[in-house]
Amino acid sequence: MHIPDSMLPAQVCAAGYGLTGLMTWYSLRQIDRQGNPGPQIPKAALLSAAFFVGSAIAIPIFPFITIHFVLNGLLGVLLGYFAFPAILIGLFLQVLMMGHGGFTTIGVNAVMMGIPALLAHRVFQMRHLLKQPNSRLSVGGFAFLGGAIGFLLTLFIFVGLTITTIQSGFDTKLEQTAIITLMLAHLPLVLLESGFTAMLAVFLQRVKPELLTGI
Image 1 (tube, rainbow, N blue to C red):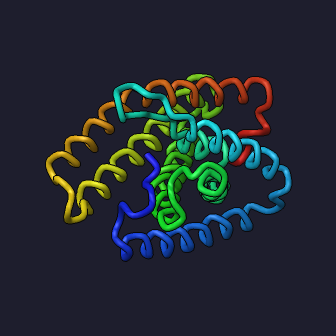
Image 2: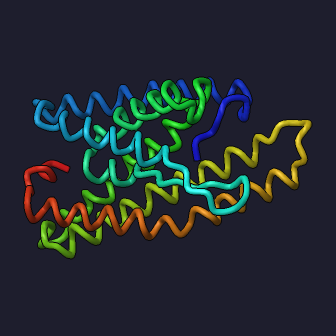
């Protein structure tokens, strides 16, 4: 679901860079308010690497159609405000090293994946409204919701952007059909990715609960 170069109008790409700059500033400001970020940096680097690898592996399902994991909900659940800069770094390295996505669309792709990651973080935090926020059911359930929201919102933003900005010279109906088919092909991954996010969060809560402290 990475949007490549030349697929979006220049003004949309420019808006993407503007929003990415704003969201990066906001995330770093929130990180600074939390105090010493040192203990979280190794975890952010590890999960940024996981995002780089996981979301770059394409799985062919039909001729000319591939799907891949997004993992932004996972980063949001486990990293909190570190998720946005971690995703931005991962996207930049994917373009630089593998040509996955595009330099002109890094901003749009970062917004498309990073903002849902921050929403996944907020959803995961909502478990603190419960009497037992750190129980296996609370951690697993809200991590699952966070993973699902991160993936689905990214998917819907992708579809909305690509369908509404189909450029002249393309067969609009054919392009819309291809985009909807791609969206439907990704839907089964929602359960897999959300389930993995929940299992990992529960595992960390059991063996290394400090990794979820403050998240």
